[in-house]
Length: 94
Figure (cartoon, rainbow, N blue to C red):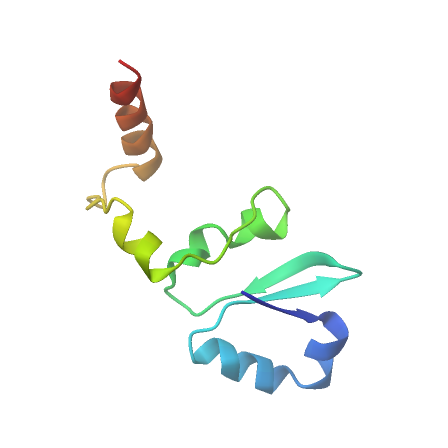
């Protein structure tokens, strides 16, 4: 994920947003602290952008090999994905 300062963003917001349109997620920082995350609409990162901005989690780039080895879950819209993961963890602990 790329990082730009508020100052850089203010100089040319159109260029930064064009990068986001092309699929890049960008952190906006003020004095080294992340204050916003710009991500393409509909991206999986939308779920976590507020947590990253608050400093509660940090995301690291994932390689293609790592991505393919991760489990994939089909979650129906009426099911809470967190509840599904917690249930799986409970099964693993048994």
